[in-house]
Amino acid sequence: MANKLRRKVALIIGNGDYTRSDNKLTHCTKNATDLSDLLQKIGFDINEIHTNIKRDNEMNVIFRKFANTIEDDDIILFYFFGHGYQIDHVNYLIPIGDKYIENESDIADFGVNAEHALELLLEKKKSYAMIFILDCPTSYSFKGKSESGSTIKGINVDSSLGPSIQLICTDNERRSSNNIFSRHLLANLAAENVTITDIFKHVEELVSRESDRKLCPLIINRLQQHQEVYLNEILNFIPDIPSNARWKSKGITIVGGIINGVNGPQGITVTDNQTIFVTDTNHNRIMKYTEDGSKARQIISRKTDGKHEREQLHRPSTVIQDAKSKKLIICDRGHYRIVRWNPKTSRFSQIIQENMACFGVAMDEEGCLYVSDTEKHEVRRYESGDQSGKVVAGGQGQGHRLSQLNSPTYIFVDGKQAVYVSDRFNNRIVKWEKDAKKGIIVAGGHGNGKDKHQLFRPAGLIVDQSGTVYAADHLNHRIMRFRQGETYGEIIAGDNYLSGDRSNELNGPEGIAFDCQGNLYVVDSYNNRIQRFDIQTD
Image 1 (cartoon, rainbow, N blue to C red):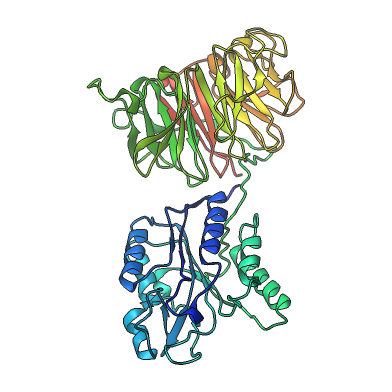
Image 2: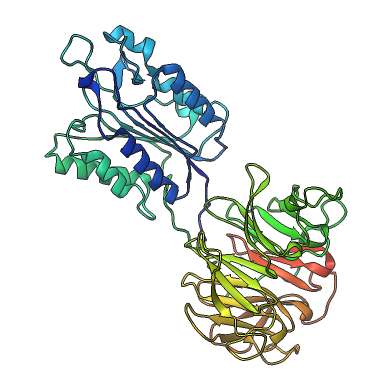
């Protein structure tokens, strides 16, 4: 099962334009910009790059503002490029307005106590891991002296603030163009599926080797034992369900009833941290639940005052979460649009597409968006910034041929960008390989019967890593499993083909999802509830 995804935030400060010429550092702005661009590509939130900060109070304001953006369990990265100095085991970061620094005694007055600054960052929230990268030259010259300095030796981080790891390079020949440390850092920091510990060790070895051991970056590792921290973890979005998996026949109602009731729900998403998002379609809202449904929160709704229509939903059908940005992507079906919702601001941050009869949404591992259109009978793929999209399934008009679809609804995209489509009125699940002109029937397609090789208005679907298809057989009131290459499926939830509201029955199931343990979640639409069928472990 996939590991939990965590939010990643970074603070970048680059100081280079110091007062005296012998303290000036090249590459300040370029290093900060390059690092910011790199981190944003791998999902870090960076609001602003801070360069050439003049005074210690300005730097402290930056730390305070950044602290207000931190949330519990974040991965925090702090990068400082500039001069650092250590006095009596206390480390200071020096702003560029250093004209009054004449000797060591002035450092404490005009520099920023690094330990205090980082305590400020974490005084309100508890991080998952703190990563410090200090890119500081060895020598800092005082007024009237050629050079001096007790170089910064690493920040003393109180263990109560959480696990941390530091990488410090204190001699980078900054006045030359041979930017060894920065070059290797940028080349390796975004390595896929490599822990930050291994990245730092690799950078340390590369820098030491290239400089003939003249430069030896220091690593201070205070992460917890066996704690693995990834900056660029590529998770497999495809569930890994054992081939012989079975689920308990009786479901547990985790959503439903008077307190946290839903009305005609359709779509469902279960995130890696077990948060559940449901499209409460007839209530025109998105609901957020904990794993067991005990805590419910309405996060997007439609107000009854008739105002601010663009900030409301009307009969949303499906919802997914962008694993990197944590923003929700919603098919606002009643408004004929796809919208992006920002949980930080509790507002829509973008209307992605408009004027389309959307129903299903999905996202591949590259971040490309897929949308089904029930009126154009097609599925389109949208890359970032692309408004037109590319037809990847159907698009040849309404019909039953393999090149056609008939009111496609729910969709699923696998790791090879193959698109699986619930072809509703053709009563089948069709797989479209990347760039294919025709689909392949992988479930149903034998009329709208109740036999195990048939489907009746298929709805939500999921495909696991082995190619097994799981589908909500909507009007047969059951969940089916079709192993790859097999025509006949098997019932894994629901009482054969009979509707009902007992714990082992379903009535018009819509969306389905698995959590990281393999438990099955079913939107039992006509019963206005969400059922969880626990995977059997015996």
